[in-house]
Image 1 (cartoon, rainbow, N blue to C red):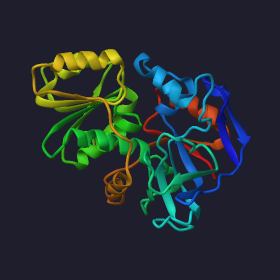
Image 2 (cartoon, helix red, strand yellow):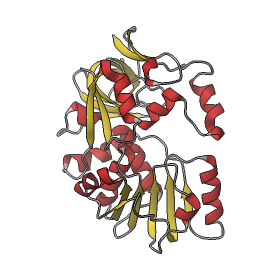
Image 3 (cartoon, rainbow, N blue to C red):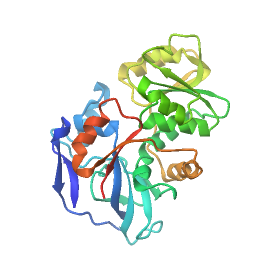
Image 4 (cartoon, rainbow, N blue to C red):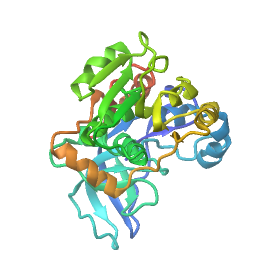
Length: 326
């Protein structure tokens, strides 16, 4: 089968299209013919190995000291079940599924084997109203955004701000917060504001023209997807018992946020587990009801994976970059 192999840590040109052995499902695994996958900011970080110093060493031990141990990247996909192991009961050949791979990665290939009930990641039947390219963009970004918002118990009537709202996590967070009944402020660059209004943001802020941390306004939840905003100042823009959710913080951001929140009822969270099968089932509900739409910016064929990576890390993408595998 064809797969994109990451031969070393570094620039996109290290990604190579190669023939690799087609996997065979174990007793508890499902073999999926991948129809579409995505390139996320996390895929680009893994390729570059661009991580904060406090997690650099454990990540290097997990993914390979000198070269990548997991050489096929990709964290989400949509496709068809081609075969199942003898102990699998939830899926049969021909099922249309979408999945988050979790730590094993491997979605940037024509085929992948995933456990029916993995410890990390999840697999579920696709929403009936989506094509493969749209469905592939839901599990990782949608699942992570859902986990964060649930941690803060976002509910009707609350005020939620999403900082860095124009990417994969952000576009799902904006829409899911609206599904949960919140009033949503979306912060990003000017070219992304029209799209953010279109997906339901009640208010949009161009970060180049307005600093939301500098005014008197407060929010019940701030979901920060970018790393550059001063975390201590974000904490001070929370209501008395508000939550700061940080999807991609540096070590100093965590320390400053915790310090700013000391002695108050404000809470800071910077971790969320990967989506579960129940999360994928939950996401299918608003997707099929037309209340949650995966935002697709560009589509690339598998053989143009390096170009997809370059665009995904350019800072220009709106929502998701999809790679069509078949």
